[in-house]
Image (cartoon, rainbow, N blue to C red; front, side):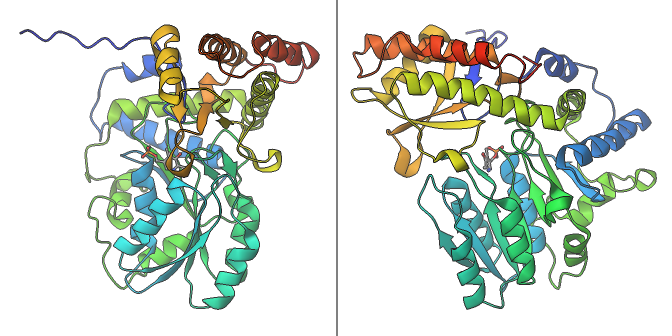
Length: 401
Ligand SMILES: *Cc1c(COP(=O)(O)O)cnc(C)c1O
């Protein structure tokens, strides 16, 4: 048998990531591969750091894209900052907080878990109680935007609380970056990681990270070596540090970095505030359609992420069947529920390039068709109109698609 080229289907990606990648970014990925120490590549790396400073709203010198997906950014934060015997308060209100706990324990440290129900934000009072009970805590770790539930926690308040107790704060911003307000320096975040395939709309495989001077100092003064050779920032900085001293650490994913560079240029062109506003705007339109159908959201409005909508299944809906039909007949991907929400919710992403009017109307129309055919208990035939009504009433709110 001869295997020929792989041609993926054209999809509309409205799940929890990856999100639709813009043609501009796809084109950037296809540019010629050059050497990872080529002066032109090094120039691009310097621009990348400047662009990441803007996206994160930080001046942190230690800011770079880790050469692996968001999970590796998570691991980079933990293996560099946590040493055996340390105590870390880990907030768990969904899947990704649970992974933070595993990271802490694999570092030989103790995780003090603060748990909240899935769909709720992290309860600040509970974190404060844990910190009072464990005054020897070194770090507080939490997820800003829980992609498994669609809940956003108050990062600014949690970081402030951590600092009041002389702790560093590690923040997961994989889904929040470029989707909802995030201000690393203003909020004093010590260590942050994100991903490329959510609201930045670049392909997966890179994880932007940033560390405050205090966190960098903590890493330089470790008593033990970082157990991961690949993620040890003391070594990685030999490549991503000052341009004049750049030396081989690993071969950077050259073309993937072109893609991220282009996505960040696009973010800069749009403006962060405009990107945040665009996510809120199209979420409101999607919400109008979802609610017109008679469906609801898992998360209270006050803590709901615009870029990740956990929508409760209507009575009579067969989860896998609906998602299967959306993919097969509409080439539309939405996400399934995870953990305690499996089979109960759909996760509709409005991330980055995929967050636009066309997608909102397309997704509502497709859901309306499939749910009506399945004789689910919804108000049929009204969802798209409701979204269009919203757009007609708020025409000036956002200029970009
Ligand atoms: C997607 C995601 C991750 C993991 O990122 P990968 O790129 O899949 O490794 C971590 N945290 C959150 C909140 C995410 O949404």
